[in-house]
Image (cartoon, rainbow over all chains, first blue to last red; front, side):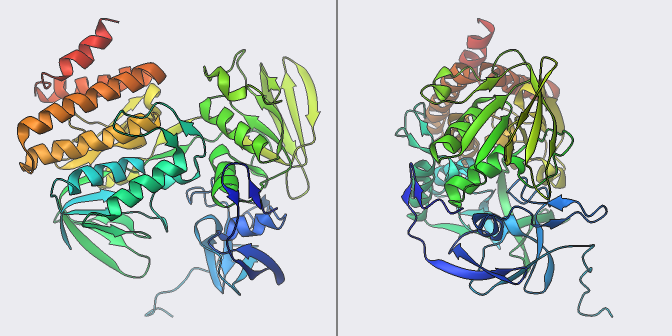
Length: 107
Length: 370
């Protein structure tokens, strides 16, 4: 849930933008991280663990624990806690081992 | 790219060090991995009433804004969204913005990498809804998002109680502070006054369960089990310095439990075992905001002293004052950390045979005299 009126910081006057999480259109505030934007919509599960497919969500919030991986606009294993949400962004849960990106000269 | 001083990490320690150096004429560059400067200070809404005398007491995020604004008025190169990713054989540091990588050749480096939160594990700790207290604080104060409706806090240090209070003020029902000891770790009674937050001593989380996220938590209090319907568990088991970038710079490490565990060795100038690589802030041992600011400033002053960039008598006077403030603040709020810090410094000087500066006698003497 968005915290529209903060007890210390007051009203949140940031612009509302929209993005997709698993094909669902959601609202976010400009400048939020993807993880925060997902959680603002009442969703805690970002994806599943790679080996046992157990539910995973935000844990450390600062890009160290790698629990909150998502796929962003086709790019796999992006840290949702350390990436800002953008208008129209397409975000998907990672549901298995990510494809390892190949360099330009590999095939 | 060439610079007199490279600062890795634009939190309070790095920003204060940068101001000190740049306002005394050193060509200074600050890199930070985040989109904005300020580090973890950005989401600290609590009021600091014991800052160093040359700062006005204020809330954490206000202090972050002050440090950033003050620095932007100077000729400092600020690179947000840039990470240190390695060191080259020629001594320069590899920096990337995620697209391109370049070398920074710096005469001196201050690394203010900060700290990470210690996890604490129990069955179900990987469920969504279990997070560090720091993550919950980021959500409410920086992201303006409620991480849950009903919460348990695991741990009872100052930070645990601060976050519990902030969650409560934002409308989260904090159902309990779970502490395995028979008393709170925090000595600060004020943190829980005038809020209705139960304290569960002699207690441990046995397990958390739920379908895809936390729904129920079993707490064992002295052999008696209770069930809590909560959707948020915040783990606050203390912090530990982030030292990997110092390993890249070949700095020797030491272990000090009271400073948060493993950390780089450093001397009275906050220089590590790698010449010209300095350390400050929570990376140099977990401390309070005053300690974070002051260690950054002492490191920068030491570099100024070495570079002959400022009047040496003036710098020595300033360092005397800064150490006095560090002693005043840490001995009041965190005496065991100060003791451990002085241990690190003493050991370093003992190993190298370099004498401690005379002005430190009062600091060290103050401690040994009790």
